[in-house]
Length: 384
Image (tube, rainbow, N blue to C red):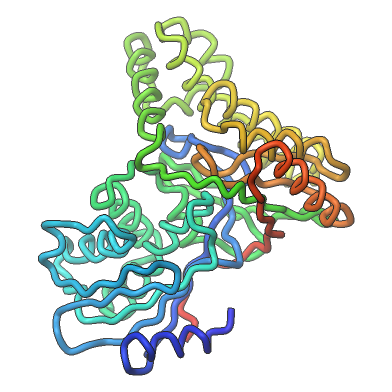
C-alpha cells in the first residue's frame, strides 16, 4: 500500500499531518469454523492485507473518525456511548468504550482508516478495525496492556457495544499472527501454538463470492444458541464445559440426549470440526498436504449439511473449485452466509483455477467473484 496516498488524504480531511501509522491484518481461517465459541481449536492465519490507521492528537476531548472506504464521517465525545451510531464507527467506538470502562481517557485524536480487506467478505475487516484501534490507544495512552488483553477488549467491544456475539478467533489472529505461520488456538483457554505453514509448491487462494453477509442480522446468533441448547441437553447426564471437549466417539454415545434433530446436527458439526482441526494440524506438521486438503473438503461438507451456513454461492465456489486441476481442498471460510472460500492450489495451476472458477461461478450464479493469492503476514503493529 502506498502510504503517501493515506497521508495526503489525512491532510485533506483534518488539515494537518498525521503523527503515526498503524496496521492490523485481516485473517483467513484455514479450518475450524463455528467452533471458537464452542471451546474448540481453530487454525487461522493473518494476511498481508488489512486495515491502516493514521492518527494525530488534538487538544479537546473529542475524536474524529474518517475512512477512505466509507462515506460516513463523525466527531464524537463520550456522550456517544449513550446513543451509539449505526454506522461503521460503532466498531472503533466500542474499543474506546473498553478503554474508558477501565479508567483510561481515550479521547483527543483524529483518526483515518483505510482497509484493503473486502468488506463483508468474511476476512475479519471488523476485527482488524477493532484491534488496530486498541493497539493505537494502548500505544498513545501508554497503558502497557499486552496484545492478548487488547484482543480480549476488541472482542468484548464487538460483543457488547456492536451486539455481535462473535468468538475470539478473529481478533486473536489479527493481533497475534506471524508471517509464515498459522495459529493453533484453543478458544476455551487461549492457549496457542504457532505452526509453520509449509505448503511449498502450493498457494492459498481466497475467492470472494461478492455476496455480502451481515452476521449481526444473520443466523449466526441462532447457531450459537442451538449449540448452547445441545450442550445443556448433554449436561443433563454428563458434565461437559464445551461441546468441543467431546471426542467424536463420546458424542455418539450422548447424542440421543438431544431431542431436536437440527440442534443435534449443529452439535455434531462442532464436535467433528474440532476433530478435523486437530488432525489437520498433525498432518500439516508431517507435510501431508493431500490429507489436509481432504479435511478442508470434509469441513465444507459439514458446514453445508450439518451447520447449514453455506448457501448456493459458497457451495458453487467450493464444490466447483474442488473439481479443478491442482486443487487439494476448498472450503468456505468465515462465519458463512456469503463471504469467501479458501482453496489449496498447486502453484502452477493457480491462474487456470482462477480463470475456470470465475467463469463457472458467473455462469451458475450471475455474480463476479474476486480472487486473492494469500500471503501470510504478521499481526498488529505500528509502522511509524
